[in-house]
Length: 75
Image 1 (cartoon, rainbow, N blue to C red):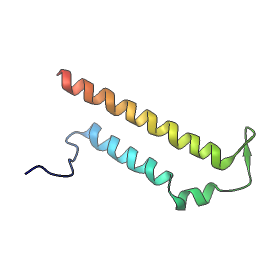
Image 2 (cartoon, one colour; image 1 turned 180 degrees about the horizontal axis):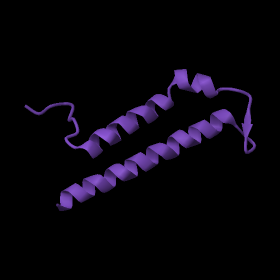
Image 3 (tube, rainbow, N blue to C red; image 1 turned 180 degrees about the vertical axis):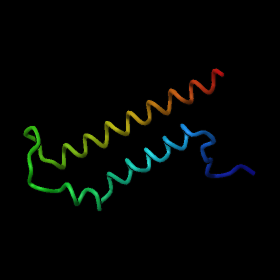
Image 4 (spheres, rainbow, N blue to C red; image 1 turned 90 degrees about the horizontal axis):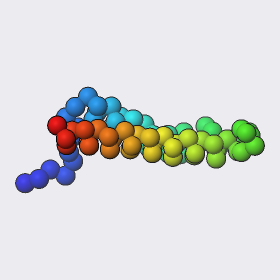
């Protein structure tokens, strides 16, 4: 029987899992409540800047994860 959840087996895998979970948590309400202020950063509301940072950080973590998976497949 196959498991529903597959856990990482390497340090890099655990690091990526922790980074991705932290980024998901950064996009949930308790953290968003902290940045939901009437403050402008580079002409944009702080909430928009925070959202962009979370989205771009998720993309970076996924790109790093893809490179690690490709490297492991070739070895």
